[in-house]
Image 1 (cartoon, rainbow, N blue to C red):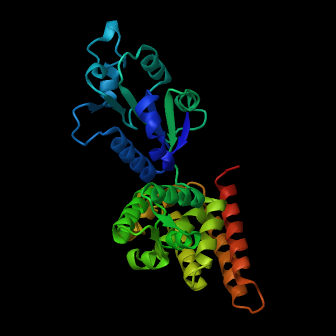
Image 2 (cartoon, helix red, strand yellow):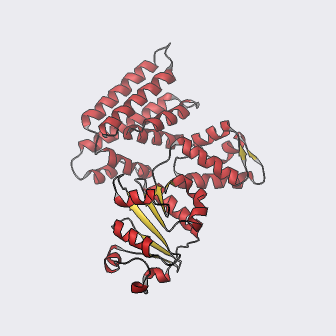
Image 3 (cartoon, one colour):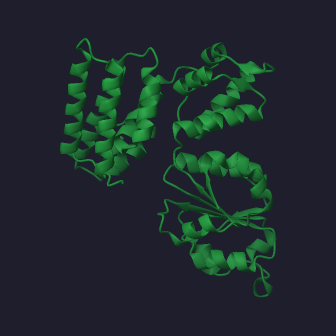
Length: 341
């Protein structure tokens, strides 16, 4: 049964009644952490819970049968309500099927699968089997984030007008964990008020334009066209100068060029060398982007940006349209480099 990380709260009834196993998979570590945290809250699992246990790779090797049956009455599952399989522990399909076939308790199996391809046998089984909840943990799109915000505020009996949501999206980082923190802070600020206003947003939430630009740069270099269009449109609708947009993109790609030019160590180590401590969230995206970007490709993207800056200085051109079209073009170029179809 398929689901997405931002839907985790809405999945509570299935988790408490119909599901025997949960598979978390995806490339976004922040999303996986957020989903796992929310999952534990829904299930009532504390950090020192006595009814949950994590099996290591070594324990898995020693415990071939992961379900309670007559031949395995002393299984860990006979004593524990929740069994966690961490990402670094390989979990074959046969073990998952055995668990489902022989399960005679209300135990819940929770597997952190990491970045599983569409051809992964465990992922395919989880997506098709109604007894398994397969939760994909990738960074959600802006419409998905917006839907999540609206659902969370509705759950807390708060109204919010569309223009206010747009303003909120300009100010918050596109990270589920941080979004929830900002929303909780906002709810605390408005108190008993039924509707959240623009004044509430401006008073309670600091302007995170820098974070929004970081997101845009990551999307651009990843080749995520839809997210580039959405994020750039939101930024261009603000009163922020396009000069700050150009500076952020140029700085990002010049840093990527420096990393690609430095052969002193593996890329994952070189990336840290060119980042300030406050830029830690760029580390993983940049490391991944070095796998498909080349020095020549980065120079071509920088040339496009230079041409764009020159065009926007001329009068008579619809600046926002030109900026948006050029950024989408760079994102499409990145998508081809990454081999995405």
